[in-house]
Structure formats: structure tokens, C-alpha cells
Length: 168
Image (tube, rainbow, N blue to C red; front, side):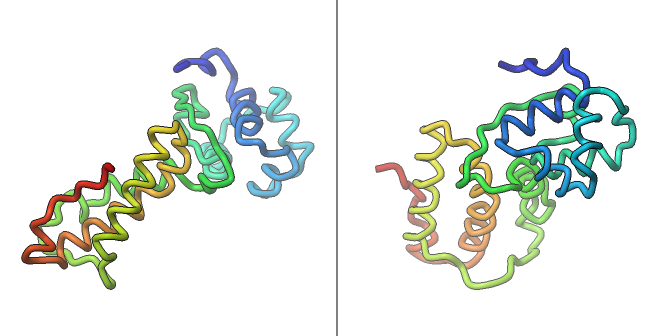
């Protein structure tokens, strides 16, 4: 399915992602501080979407990247349990230098999640992934990643040495 929106204009991509997300023009227009008439004209190519700030606000509201609106689509099913901010949040979590270099000694704040709860959370996300509920899995992964890093920094001894096997 990659490339489905390649031949669409930016406005048509906005409409495609908005519909795929199950969002009305009224809602999206409100999220980006524009009128429904403006959004309709943009989606129907009667006005150009040529300002990066506008494209970025549309991408943020639609929970896609600017690349998605500029012809590098990635497909994701949005559901009520996936939340509004998935792909950008996961990208930020994965590219956070503190998480990429935990050995530099930058501590994560707070109390660590219990290993049993962490195992349960990982199993839940794994089940969502296996069920193709990518939006939900993508929303949960940044939180689980942060919890796992804190647990790895906090637990020692037999708790820290035990494998993180969560598959039943």
C-alpha cells in the first residue's frame, strides 16, 4: 500500500488522511485555527498549501509527518485507543539522546514501574502489534520505553538479572 497517496496533491493528501482518521473538516479546521471553508478550498486545490508552518500544523493535527503530506506516506489505522499523537511521539522517544546513550549516566526521573507491570505492558503492546493495532502500539511504546530505561537503571540483583520474557 506504500505510495497510495503519491499522485495526490498536498490538499488531496490532507483530505485523505483526515478521512482515514475519521475527522470532519470542522474538527480539523478548528485544530489548525482555520475556517471550514479554508480547509475545503485547500483540500480541493483552490488555494495552495505552500507555507511550511501551515503544513506542519496540519500534519500535527492529523498525527502524520510533514513527509506524509509532502508525498512520503506511511499508513496507520487510527482508533479511539491509539490517541492523537503517535508517530511523532514514538520518533521523539526513539531519537532522544538520553535513551540512545543511557550509559552516559543521565538518570530518568521518578519511581520505576514494577517488573510485573512492565512485563504486562510489553505483552499488551505485543498483542496490539500482532493484532495490527499499530496506532495503539505506537502510542504506548514511548511510555514503555521510558519505563524500561528507568527500570534498567533502578533494579539490581536478581530482579535486574531476570530476563524480560513477557511472551506467554
